[in-house]
Image (cartoon, rainbow, N blue to C red; front, side):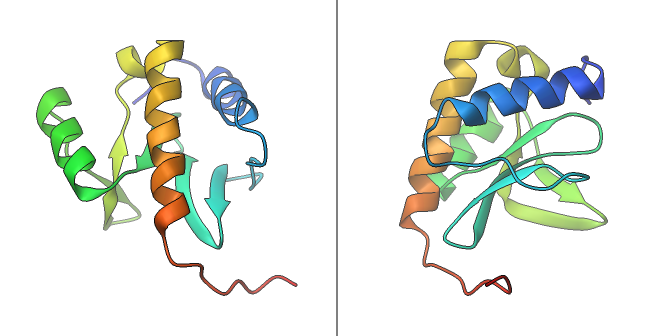
Length: 116
C-alpha cells in the first residue's frame, strides 16, 4: 500500500511516464502504460506502482526488496513487481526502474489489440 493519497500517487506516476517521450498514460479508472499491445506498468487501486520486469531483474528486485509477485483480482501477475513506497518516492531510483520496464517492454512480441 502506498503512503500517499491515491491522487498524489497518480500524479507521481504521471510524472514518471511523462519523462519518457512516446509513452502515454492510459486508462481512467485503472491507469497503465503499454507498448505494442503489452502492458508494462500500472498503478493499483491502493496507489502502488507495479512494473513488468524480465525474470532476472524481477527475481533480484524481489529478493532485495523482500516483495512478492503482484496479485490483482485474485490472480498472480508473474512478471510484475510492486515498487515499495520508499523506492517509489526516490525520483532517480524509480526513473531507472521504470526505464528497465520500458526496455523490457520493447523486447516483447507485439500483440494484436482490439482497438483500431
